[in-house]
Image (cartoon, rainbow, N blue to C red; front, side, top):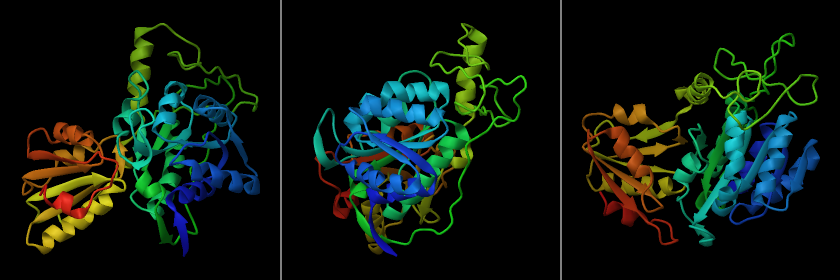
Length: 363
């Protein structure tokens, strides 16, 4: 049992999951991740490098990943904005990478150390084109550790960018946590054959087994739409198949939603990340006052939990979406629910966190 900050837990989890390269640039409220990695990586046969800016930080981790290292970079909203072109490149070239976004108030430089959850849509659509993405949102220090491990594993399993969508609340929170002794680690995928090797030929799970640079394989990496050889092809058929595969390769079995009190609930609170901590207390208070309120917490933000919301119990007549922004997740909930129940927004965007009473008035 140790006292640990959320950002520190991310760094420790990354090391435990096999990350051996970090490239980044300091920015509040994520800087403690870089500071921790600077201390931990040299002790674990790894490399830490501070780059000149966020764009270079993203480029250097992609290069290290192509060379066979498990990699991580961390920033906040303004820095994530600068990383977007290379996040798209990672999606197109299928390069495993974990990007931590410890969210703060925006837009632009906004309020540098104030909590926010305004980067939900940036995580999904920040880079251009029909790309797939995975985004996970922890609500505690221990879950920051667990989801970082999952993020690294998902990046390797699906060869895709994975965003750990933290917020300042959890990033700077300190809690007593008991870290696991054993964790499951997904290894770097390896080619099954060298003869007739095509780096982007999909395996049975639709994910290619791309060799690491320097291991004797002929590999061509590009952000252009390419065929199984990795070389660009101006083909409508190849383009369609590539975009479809990039989405279908990410399986629904990774989608996590935590729920409580839904069996008798007439309405339910939907939340995620650090805000879910306050939302849960508001639900407990409401139930203590005789209201039949349930609790829904999104752990996986992207892909969105469409099937979950499509199969909500019929006793739930209203959902209240609590988020620290002007309203982003609420629109996804409305889309997924498709009119089966009422959906209301309980939003806050004044650089302060929710109090339970502010959520209770929405119920």
